[in-house]
Length: 107
Image (tube, rainbow, N blue to C red; front, side, top):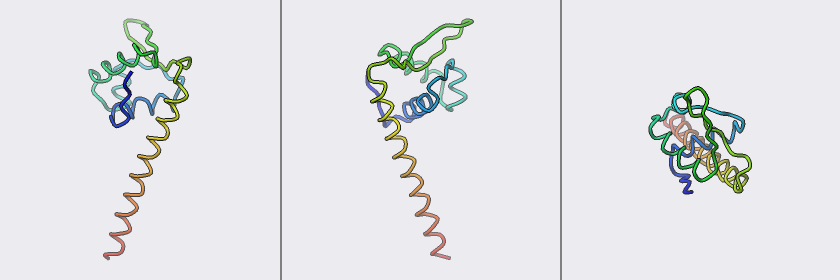
């Protein structure tokens, strides 16, 4: 199961589900929440379900996805996700602070 932490889709998907571990959503709902195309989400969730990280269930003709907390590498993937997403967020924040400081100095 290849998880690409450089992929914005993987970052958003894993970041959302690991911060909301009891969440269960269908594709269109996730598409609205995460602002990604439903086709790409469906493809990635299908791959992640095959690997065992996500569980899929069908309710009223809709396929719902949720995290499999019993997955062998759940803790490690969760830690990597938080580490990568937090690192990216701090890099963006420090970048914004630098630009703001530069604007103040030029005035």
